[in-house]
Amino acid sequence: MQIGVDLGGTKIEAIALAGEHTLARRRVPTPAGYEAILMAVRELVREVESEAGDAPRPEAIGVGTPGALSPTTGLLENSNTTALNQRPLDVDLAAVLGRRVILENDANCFALSEASDGAAAGARSVFGVILGTGVGGGLVVAGQLVRGPNGLTGEWGHNPLPWPSAWERPGAHCYCGKRGCIETWLSGAGIRREFLLRSGHHLEVEAIAELARGGEPHAQATLALYAERLARALATVINVVDPEVIVLGGGVSNLAHLYKDVPAIWGRFAFVASGRGGPLYTRLTPARWGDSSGVRGAARLVAPGA
Image (cartoon, rainbow, N blue to C red; front, side, top):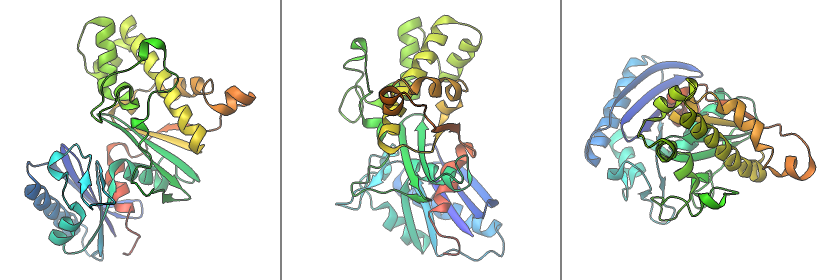
C-alpha cells in the first residue's frame, strides 16, 4: 500500500493505493493555521489507513504541496498556503505521523502521477503542466522525477513569455517581483484579465469559455490568443527538454480547444519545425486523473511496500 497527501490551499486530500486501485480516499477543507494543518493531515492518514483494511502500514508517506523546501534552510518556500512558509514541514509532519515523510512540489506529483499510470504512461519523457491559479510543471524521465540542486525543475511559469509582441511588453507584474512571467499570461487570472481588456467585463474562465462556444467575439479572441501564447511557451519547453508527452492539468486545462489548437501552432516556434522544416512529434494530452493526479503522485513518491 502507498499513501499520499495533497496539501493544497483550499483542500487536503489523502489516498491509499494498491497499484492503480484506490483503497481509500478522503478530503477535507484546509484549516487555518499551521498546527491545525498538521493535525488535519494526521487525521486523514489515520482514516485512509483504517478504511484500507488489512493492507500493511507503509513506513513512509508522500506529501505534495505548493512550494519547495529550501536546500539551504530546509524550510518551505513559495507556498500559496502561506501558513506553511518558513516551516520545516517535512520534519513536523514526520513527527505527527510517526514515520518518514517524502515532501515534493505539487506539480512534480502531478507529473509523476500522469507518467506512472496516467495519460503519459509508458512514455520515456513527460512534462506535466499545471495551468490554474498558478503555472508550474514537473519533469519525469524514465519513470523518475528530475530534481535539480535548487529545487526549480519545471518552474517554467517564471520564465518570460517568449517571442512577445511589442504590445505585450513589459507585461503584468508577477508576485515573484518580475513582469511578464508566463504565469501572468497563462494562469486563470491571465485569461480573465485579457477578456476584461477586450470586453470591459469581469468573468470567470468557465463563463468566458461558454461565451466562446456561443460565438461571442471577445471570448473567442481571448481563448485563441491564449492558445497561441501557450504554444509559444511550450515550444521553449520542447526546445530544451523535447518530451514525448506534455500533460496539462489544473482548471484551465479543461479548455478543450487547447489540445487541437496548440499543437497546430507550436511548430511555428519550436526549433525543429521552424529551423529545419520537420514536424513535431510531442503529444499534448489532458490528464487522466484530473484533480486526483496530485494526490496519486504523492503516493507514488514512496516505493511500493516501503
